Image 1 (tube, rainbow, N blue to C red):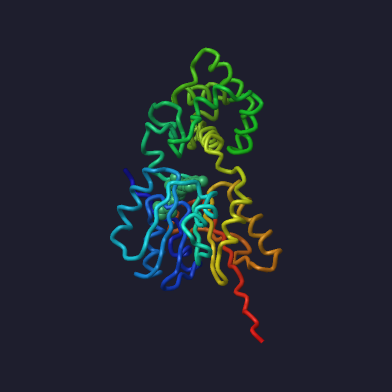
Image 2 (cartoon, rainbow, N blue to C red):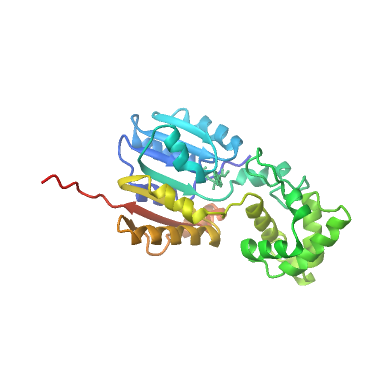
Length: 302
Ligand SMILES: C[S@@+](CC[C@H](N)C(=O)[O-])C[C@H]1O[C@@H](n2cnc3c(N)ncnc32)[C@H](O)[C@@H]1O
């Protein structure tokens, strides 16, 4: 299995300005690369609350983070539940939050999970394996119109209509259960000239269906706003997005928060990875980093 390389690590750490004894939330801990560095900055009296909705990631992260001093809580949950979970463990305010959206390379490497169009496996695609609906189940019940919308909106797929029609035709024959069934449907639907392109013609379809199955963009903007409200004065939050939908949610959330006068957006335009990083880690290429700070309001005791 490839170890996921933390994207824009230096930029994330510079931006978060974590101080000794800080309380940190990593909403998407993955393999724990960012979390390890954040925890080091907070020192032995720091505290990390790490979330991931994929239990196998929590196991990987705790392996790495166990050796780093500081207090740690690992929570198997959707980061959209951060405020409620902080309430449950009696934490009001936190000093730094990171949301590094999307998937881990390990998700693609583990063919059995159905995220990859390479290899053949059941069409699962659930990030949280305790969730009910798999990709096969969704593709089995969605209308053609819904499939078109998802492929367009979440995948930016130009041939959404052709692909959705082919999916619906094949599922009637019971041929929409495995990743190879979905690849075959896309390949036969798209114009032949696209079949030899460098980017596999099923890339966008797989991405779109994954986002739908996991409801990755649902209520994302309001969740980001709710999480930022838990920052202490001077506390900072960083988002790393790889998809235009995630980036728009972060951008709009930060803009709304700034309107309240209690927050300051630190990134007028998102930061991007350096060319060196993209060369070393091509999967960082689409990353966009945004950051916000909760303004420290001086108490007036006079
Ligand atoms: C890009 S990886 C994070 C990598 C991590 N920063 C590191 O350094 O290893 C994204 C992680 O977020 C998790 N994730 C995605 N959406 C989530 C959500 N809504 N709630 C909780 N975890 C989520 C995924 O399971 C994945 O492990």
